[in-house]
Length: 153
Image (cartoon, rainbow, N blue to C red; front, side):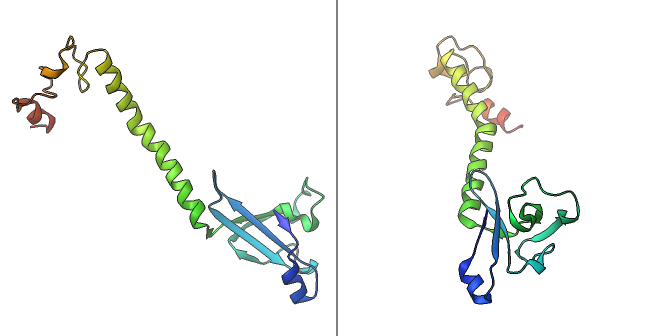
């Protein structure tokens, strides 16, 4: 996104640009930006936030010829953290991974109970879920053998 920054331009009494580049999905979490106010700063405009990766100005021209100074040829690694976007992105991806790791196990147990099987080992209980599982000891109040087997002892 490139835009004219009129406040800074009037400060320097010359036209200039503020180019801001944000990264992240679903919200922007990291940003880099350049601001320069003369054509003499090209091909190496000063990076205010981030660090330069490569400058493509000496290579083939950008397909985005409508932007001034080859602005789409700028490449940088963003270093400014936008906290709200970073937190929301982290929670979004954590929820996805939580579903991947625990969703299949929960679905498998739910399906086993609906079919009248032990939710832990899948043993056929023939509708006697209340009595617990004789195979692994699931839901057996007085049986400690299942609990010992669970701990690996």
